[in-house]
Image (cartoon, rainbow over all chains, first blue to last red; front, side, top):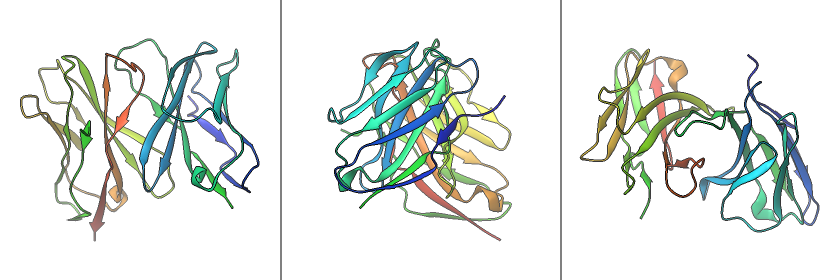
Length: 114
Length: 116
């Protein structure tokens, strides 16, 4: 099976712009979770989508949003970018139906905000 | 209080030797899952091993094993016969059943360097 894919891999934006990141889960997986990784804060959970519905949300401002399509692909959007949004954004997929199932991660999108 | 604590500074190990990476956790949930991930410099998080809180046996996956001590709330990763390709960041993570049921809570990570 193909793994989790994320596009783009690298992105440079300026403050105030918005950005959309894409994630394609492993075939058959219906849950997609997003995480932000920064040197200062480490890995932080953004949100999780399951069957096109947001099932869980982390403690991030409303500028961070996401959605999931019927084919389980997911996008996350960050509006009005700030310098502090520079990070590695990781998405992870799982079947979404097990209590402690493993989440499999994609290669990430490195976002740099100037 | 931190949910997952990884306090070791950068770790160094000689190739072919074994190394233990420490992880302690904090939860009041009787049922939880513990995970270890490896993150090379490329950035991708690679799943290594999983331990359920009710599992009687310590988990093993090839060269990776998990030294699970439930009473001490520790879940240390043991890598046997280290290889140069094991040089990476290693993260311990936990998933609990209460609250955010799909959320993984990660530790700060440990940098492992394998010397030839």
